View 1 (cartoon, rainbow, N blue to C red):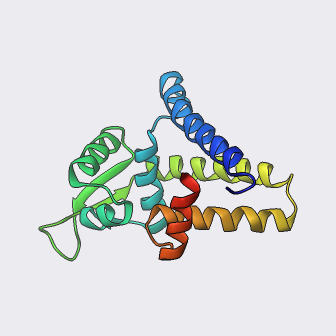
View 2: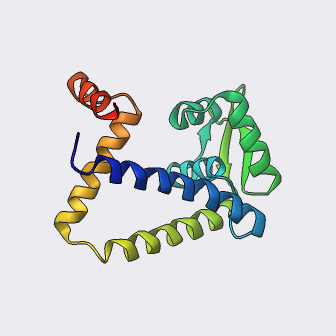
Length: 158
Protein backbone atom coordinates (compact mmCIF):
# COMPACT_ATOMS: atom_id res chain seq x y z
CA UNK A 1 0.00 0.00 0.00
CA UNK A 2 1.10 3.56 -0.66
CA UNK A 3 2.89 5.45 2.10
CA UNK A 4 0.23 8.08 2.73
CA UNK A 5 -2.88 6.37 1.33
CA UNK A 6 -4.79 6.28 4.62
CA UNK A 7 -3.99 9.88 5.51
CA UNK A 8 -4.86 11.22 2.05
CA UNK A 9 -8.07 9.19 1.98
CA UNK A 10 -9.04 10.46 5.44
CA UNK A 11 -8.40 14.09 4.47
CA UNK A 12 -10.42 13.69 1.27
CA UNK A 13 -13.33 12.28 3.31
CA UNK A 14 -13.05 15.19 5.74
CA UNK A 15 -12.98 17.67 2.86
CA UNK A 16 -16.11 16.18 1.29
CA UNK A 17 -17.86 16.21 4.67
CA UNK A 18 -16.79 19.82 5.23
CA UNK A 19 -18.12 20.90 1.82
CA UNK A 20 -21.48 19.21 2.37
CA UNK A 21 -21.91 20.49 5.93
CA UNK A 22 -20.73 23.99 4.98
CA UNK A 23 -23.33 24.14 2.23
CA UNK A 24 -26.07 23.20 4.71
CA UNK A 25 -24.88 25.76 7.29
CA UNK A 26 -24.54 28.49 4.68
CA UNK A 27 -28.04 27.85 3.39
CA UNK A 28 -29.45 28.00 6.93
CA UNK A 29 -27.73 31.24 7.95
CA UNK A 30 -28.18 32.90 4.55
CA UNK A 31 -24.47 33.59 3.90
CA UNK A 32 -24.59 31.55 0.69
CA UNK A 33 -27.87 31.89 -1.19
CA UNK A 34 -27.20 28.97 -3.53
CA UNK A 35 -26.59 25.22 -3.40
CA UNK A 36 -23.44 23.79 -4.96
CA UNK A 37 -25.41 22.70 -8.04
CA UNK A 38 -26.87 26.17 -8.41
CA UNK A 39 -23.39 27.65 -8.09
CA UNK A 40 -22.18 25.37 -10.90
CA UNK A 41 -24.89 26.70 -13.20
CA UNK A 42 -24.16 30.29 -12.16
CA UNK A 43 -20.44 29.77 -12.76
CA UNK A 44 -20.95 28.17 -16.16
CA UNK A 45 -23.11 31.06 -17.36
CA UNK A 46 -20.77 33.62 -15.79
CA UNK A 47 -17.68 32.20 -17.47
CA UNK A 48 -19.13 31.29 -20.85
CA UNK A 49 -22.16 33.50 -21.38
CA UNK A 50 -25.63 32.42 -22.50
CA UNK A 51 -26.12 28.73 -23.17
CA UNK A 52 -28.87 26.50 -24.42
CA UNK A 53 -30.38 24.11 -21.91
CA UNK A 54 -29.10 20.99 -23.69
CA UNK A 55 -25.58 22.51 -23.75
CA UNK A 56 -25.76 23.07 -19.98
CA UNK A 57 -26.93 19.48 -19.49
CA UNK A 58 -23.93 18.18 -21.43
CA UNK A 59 -21.37 20.54 -19.89
CA UNK A 60 -22.45 20.04 -16.27
CA UNK A 61 -23.47 16.40 -16.75
CA UNK A 62 -26.90 17.02 -15.24
CA UNK A 63 -30.15 15.36 -16.27
CA UNK A 64 -32.95 17.53 -17.63
CA UNK A 65 -35.14 17.35 -14.50
CA UNK A 66 -32.30 18.42 -12.21
CA UNK A 67 -31.31 21.29 -14.48
CA UNK A 68 -34.91 22.47 -14.84
CA UNK A 69 -35.33 22.47 -11.05
CA UNK A 70 -32.11 24.46 -10.61
CA UNK A 71 -32.93 26.96 -13.34
CA UNK A 72 -36.45 27.55 -12.00
CA UNK A 73 -34.98 28.37 -8.58
CA UNK A 74 -32.29 30.65 -10.04
CA UNK A 75 -34.88 32.42 -12.21
CA UNK A 76 -37.26 32.85 -9.25
CA UNK A 77 -34.38 34.36 -7.25
CA UNK A 78 -33.65 36.74 -10.13
CA UNK A 79 -30.19 35.41 -11.00
CA UNK A 80 -30.89 33.99 -14.47
CA UNK A 81 -33.41 34.38 -17.22
CA UNK A 82 -34.63 31.99 -19.87
CA UNK A 83 -35.24 33.28 -23.39
CA UNK A 84 -35.87 31.73 -26.78
CA UNK A 85 -32.53 30.95 -28.43
CA UNK A 86 -31.47 33.49 -31.03
CA UNK A 87 -30.71 30.86 -33.66
CA UNK A 88 -33.60 28.44 -32.93
CA UNK A 89 -36.82 29.72 -31.37
CA UNK A 90 -37.80 26.15 -30.42
CA UNK A 91 -35.00 25.89 -27.86
CA UNK A 92 -34.36 28.06 -24.81
CA UNK A 93 -31.23 29.86 -23.77
CA UNK A 94 -30.16 30.67 -20.21
CA UNK A 95 -28.27 33.80 -19.28
CA UNK A 96 -27.35 35.72 -16.15
CA UNK A 97 -29.31 38.77 -15.07
CA UNK A 98 -27.54 41.82 -13.61
CA UNK A 99 -28.08 40.33 -10.12
CA UNK A 100 -26.68 37.02 -11.36
CA UNK A 101 -23.61 38.74 -12.79
CA UNK A 102 -23.01 40.55 -9.49
CA UNK A 103 -23.35 37.34 -7.49
CA UNK A 104 -21.10 35.49 -9.93
CA UNK A 105 -18.36 38.13 -9.58
CA UNK A 106 -18.73 38.12 -5.79
CA UNK A 107 -18.42 34.31 -5.59
CA UNK A 108 -15.43 34.29 -7.96
CA UNK A 109 -13.66 37.00 -5.94
CA UNK A 110 -14.23 35.18 -2.63
CA UNK A 111 -12.95 31.96 -4.16
CA UNK A 112 -9.88 33.72 -5.59
CA UNK A 113 -9.01 35.26 -2.20
CA UNK A 114 -9.49 31.93 -0.41
CA UNK A 115 -7.28 29.95 -2.81
CA UNK A 116 -4.66 32.70 -2.82
CA UNK A 117 -4.54 32.73 0.98
CA UNK A 118 -4.18 28.95 1.09
CA UNK A 119 -1.46 28.85 -1.57
CA UNK A 120 0.58 31.56 0.18
CA UNK A 121 1.83 28.82 2.52
CA UNK A 122 3.11 26.57 -0.29
CA UNK A 123 6.23 26.58 -2.42
CA UNK A 124 5.96 26.51 -6.22
CA UNK A 125 6.97 22.82 -6.20
CA UNK A 126 4.22 22.03 -3.70
CA UNK A 127 1.71 23.91 -5.85
CA UNK A 128 2.78 21.80 -8.84
CA UNK A 129 2.31 18.61 -6.80
CA UNK A 130 -1.15 19.75 -5.66
CA UNK A 131 -2.14 20.59 -9.22
CA UNK A 132 -0.91 17.23 -10.51
CA UNK A 133 -2.89 15.43 -7.79
CA UNK A 134 -6.07 17.39 -8.58
CA UNK A 135 -5.75 16.77 -12.32
CA UNK A 136 -5.40 13.04 -11.70
CA UNK A 137 -8.42 13.08 -9.38
CA UNK A 138 -10.50 14.74 -12.07
CA UNK A 139 -9.33 12.27 -14.71
CA UNK A 140 -10.20 9.40 -12.39
CA UNK A 141 -13.65 10.88 -11.68
CA UNK A 142 -14.33 11.10 -15.41
CA UNK A 143 -13.03 7.60 -16.11
CA UNK A 144 -10.18 8.96 -18.22
CA UNK A 145 -7.21 7.39 -16.46
CA UNK A 146 -5.35 4.81 -18.56
CA UNK A 147 -6.41 1.23 -17.80
CA UNK A 148 -3.19 0.36 -15.96
CA UNK A 149 -3.70 3.40 -13.69
CA UNK A 150 -7.30 2.31 -13.00
CA UNK A 151 -6.08 -1.16 -12.04
CA UNK A 152 -3.47 0.35 -9.73
CA UNK A 153 -6.14 2.62 -8.20
CA UNK A 154 -8.42 -0.40 -7.62
CA UNK A 155 -5.57 -2.31 -6.03
CA UNK A 156 -4.84 0.49 -3.56
CA UNK A 157 -8.51 0.53 -2.50
CA UNK A 158 -8.25 -3.05 -1.21
